[in-house]
Length: 261
Image (cartoon, rainbow, N blue to C red; front, side, top):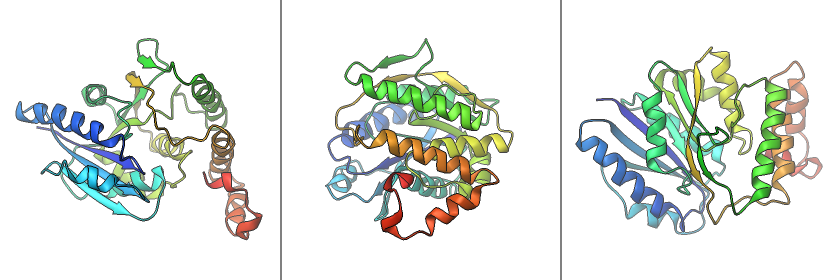
């Protein structure tokens, strides 16, 4: 029986992660009891100042692992989850958002399609996907524009690099996790870029995704942060890497905060 590690980064998710954990533990426990798939869920608490930890600990069981860090950021949290998952016998390692936007059956869809591939990512723009974007047209537009920029700068042939549901083989994660940057906005792009450098076979599949209340995205600041974050990443992966490194050495008051979104 194959085993999957599901990394779930959580920053101040007390109001949403309880439902997510309840759904995921119930769904995957049924698969495990039927000898279909073994699993573990690694919740990475990063810079939480609410009671996310207390909510998560209510679900404590053999399949749940909790990591706690004072440092924040989705990229940092996922990388730490990857490191932890690699210390055990997991065949597949992936991650999903803590807000239950991707239901457990949709994540299991990634597992079912990974045979023969090094990774599978959810594609919300596939015509076969079941997606609810009704409440936030601006987020939908921002996602479309960001993806167009990514495709131009990195030549990544994926319509949706930012969906928070991705799964990879243990072998691929072991080859690239230590190279990844921890930026919140360009982490997924960095991951897929390094996967391409390894000649990894990554498949996009239709998914099921629901826009959720309580998003941490600031619609006034986020677009600029996403744009400059991906520009900086492009510089890092170019002969002009020194420009990105030089920026990191500038005094804090001279830096544009969105470069580190």
